[in-house]
Image 1 (spheres, rainbow, N blue to C red):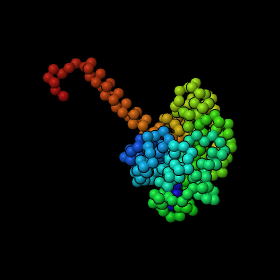
Image 2: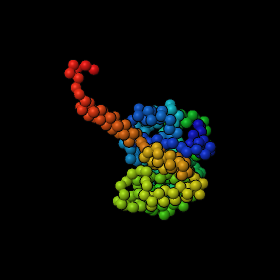
Image 3: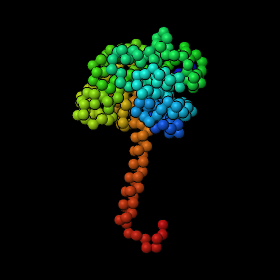
Image 4: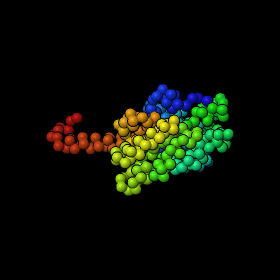
Length: 272
């Protein structure tokens, strides 16, 4: 089984740059995977992606040898085990609110005797390079629990110390809603003092427990700041936002140039 590149980066003290996919398209996944990310997550929770489409996206990303991660729709053994069987090297599970739920998550990711994952890695046997998948998968696959609610923050230490958990992944939009209700609009790159305090607390608790800390970011500038704080993985934007941003910039540039031309004297001969 091929080694997990995330663990190689962490062993050298580096921060993983993670991309994010919400568009159900193998071609866009292939494009994103070729841009230099260390890993890319496929979002089955909020993305417009079903399982069969996710498999095609995993296949498309393989040529770039980017490490594939999957966020399942929920804490569900069916979704988690099928994502791993399809070749995911890591799971980012949403809305983990207690030690019991974290233990469930770990059990779905790990084979017996550590967990209850059923053996049948149909595509993973091929995409991971074959070899001793059963003997090596538990060591290579990373398991992240998402902290996104006030309840989870109250139980942070017990979640972070769950045996077999590799890291905590912060979803800042839901965390903000969970801690402050509708006081602030949802989104990434939080600057509010109480949210920064919560993010810092999660970072410290993760490292105190000997596991990794990850943060979902909206911009490269904020992600770089988070890496400086000590985060081990930062996700920068996603395919939807990148496409929308690039399209908006292109349209805006065209409109601006057209407005400038409208104010220029016209060439009476109509020449170029």
